[in-house]
Image (cartoon, rainbow, N blue to C red; front, side, top):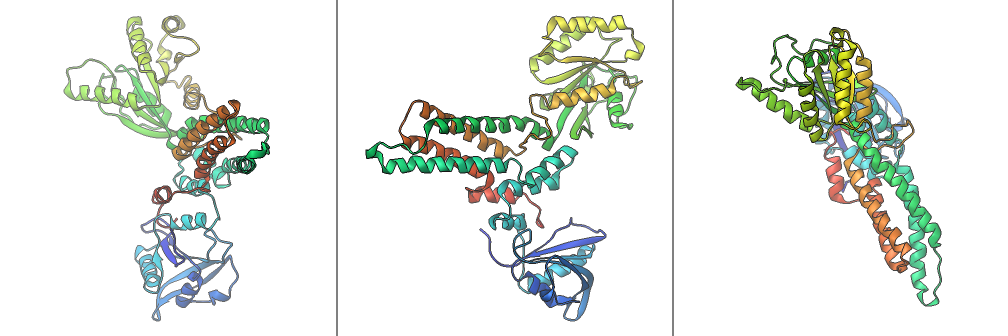
Length: 465
């Protein structure tokens, strides 16, 4: 899949900046750079050192640079690597890259540096994918998960489990060579116990995906309700800025407004929508349709209502309609600074009549004007987004849908193998089911790889990574 030639690419983003970093990898990369570097003799310098000098082309200075060299095998790709820090002019970077290309280097494909690290055994496939996740991380939580997976994460447990299963498969297949003597090398009780432990570990990883998906992609949170409930004011309060236009005139918001904020390290994409009501205004009606569409696409919703103007009947009608959709949500009674406690109790009583206290949406009373209970609102939103997931600091979390699907298939094969053991089927069939488990686990870490899968994974990387 890869060649031993020298590859080159810009490792920093395109565009003008203070510096640009150009990366080369390949056994000839240090020697090639040394041909055009005026300073120290790079081929005589120690690994992991940085050197000042100039890159020249036929005696003409292209730029003043710093060059870092890394000797094989103690480098990211396990090959010789050179990183050239030049001034951040796109023209300069392009001139240097073209100089090396003319003299034998090749422009790297997307993700080829990381692909070489994987193919050369420097990292496994989960760590390679974590590199891409780290680059695209946009919150504290996504950063921490990516760092943990780059350091091995759950892959280490899977590798250990896979080796234990390989040992049992080897014993079972050895039994087949002595089938006439009716011997048993693999203890079936211990194997069954191992499969049960494996199923428990894999199930925990599968369950963690709901949280992992939230960490990686954020939480779509729609603010929905009737006109003049204070949706735009609430959005501004959550953002701590005047993002949405606020007016006492119903129907001011006619299109959706989307903004991102972080709550406890997780990104929430808040979407302010048009007030839902019957209207003759064509533009406002479009806004209402868009609000309903956004609600259907949301992970969590906030149903906001004015405790001073919404009637019991309207409240019950709205809650029943939301319950039919089956989404996770939070009910927020707004403008409590202008209401009394008896009025608030009415809404709680009505909610208790039509929903289950344990499974139904929670009701919180707030004031967007005085910020009463806004910190509580943030905490409840975080709890909703991460519900049914293990949020312990030391819990292993998967964020990759490819890993999730492979684990689901591995668990199905495990269940089949367990069933076969309990029904005392032949060792040959048990070994077949165990090999299915091994294949699915191996596909996660890359111990069993498919060229199409690798191409798909690394094609999504940036060129210089």
